Length: 621
Image 1 (cartoon, helix red, strand yellow):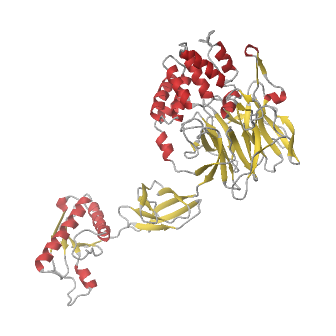
Image 2: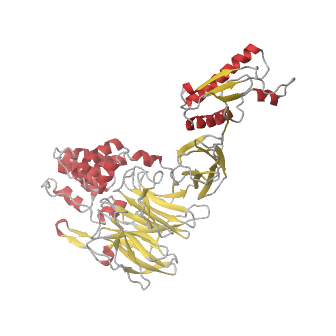
């Protein structure tokens, strides 16, 4: 049903007259009257009777496209593109394929669209980043999504919460006549009360707003006394006559209402409404100074764009302004919602790189940032649109037809912390770029590793109320770990100060902290590796340095065994140094067993034995 607001209401439905003939007359008339259910049946009859051609296939595809029957639309676009078609047909075909999760095939159709319309921004975006879907799917989720029981078996969309009242638009009123677009009843404005537990009461119609035509969605001022809402221009007897099809063509228009008691009254049409174009889907800023809306008025970049207009204190209005290419494309942008901060705008788009159908995007209007796809689970391969957010309740709402029908969903923010780590020299305060920064969970599992940027920074987004550890390391500095305390965010900072490695170099030896081995073992330990990295640093700085490594054991065990064990330890030491990029000609080693004890003892304590299990590094050259 939201396609009604994105196509019918904005005059987007068009059809080529080139291939129309007496056979298609009945179907075409139904199509032009927006009675798509009946039109589809008539076009199908033509196909069944062997009278299908490129025109009929495209009309049938467009019919299903307008009802968002993605499977049937894709089937008939495939048939239509067997003959010559315009570029937009290939774009719509790609959209329907994406809506069915067929991204590889969708890319093929987008490539054809891009070749036919190379200057279209949608084509340019595709050519710059054709395989964007995996990145969208892998984006960190910002919300959870839950279907609400307030939804019906008809279309429900445009949810927005004011105080505890959830207003939305619905076609659930079965008592009224159906609209031929999709054989659903006309739209009305409804509301439901949100309880303390987050449940919703049975929805009731907002009788004082609704007409016998389409009504909604709505937006309400902060003080709760003023409402702007969408309604058919028939409310003001504003329409054009299509004599050929015996049809009155109305538009969506914006209206203002004020509250009197529990009812809305004093309904007036906004001065920039017109029978030439539509205005719909309003969202009023919290300061009441700006009204955002959708329209296809002159100056629109695509089919439907997001606009804004100043709401003056004297009740007058400024001149509507298009939000430009930061928001709008050659496709359709609609369902704007301006957040409480008066700078974050949420909107739906079918012209940007999304997962399929309409996707929800956000953009910071206060700077030059790009619009961001909100990712899963808000967006799916189907239509996802009409996002709003109530800061006081910390909950958002949106509509989606992911379950086969436009339903209302709650969007609960996932608590997250933006964790910034800055790596510096602990002695000088100098920024350390290209340091390796890893983040570990509370089980010491490495979650991710990055290199610090030119500012010494690495950013991670982590969960609230969980402890983490940052590990930072850089050649020439001592590695270190930094605990990250549990936090509710939204931000946290770790100053990772690394001590520069200071190694004593005498004329005879490289003096490191003792490198100890475990009893009866020759493998390099973590402590040993840390010390040997210091030796590697010195040898990298002094390219002519040649080292002889001596390995020793304690006095336990017989002499021959200790000689053999120390040889293995010497070899392990040498191999570690070579593995770090030092040429083998610059490092050699030998085991001395227990022949050169550092501590003469009888009996020896464990500490004394440990001191005797050591390596030494003599300068040969």
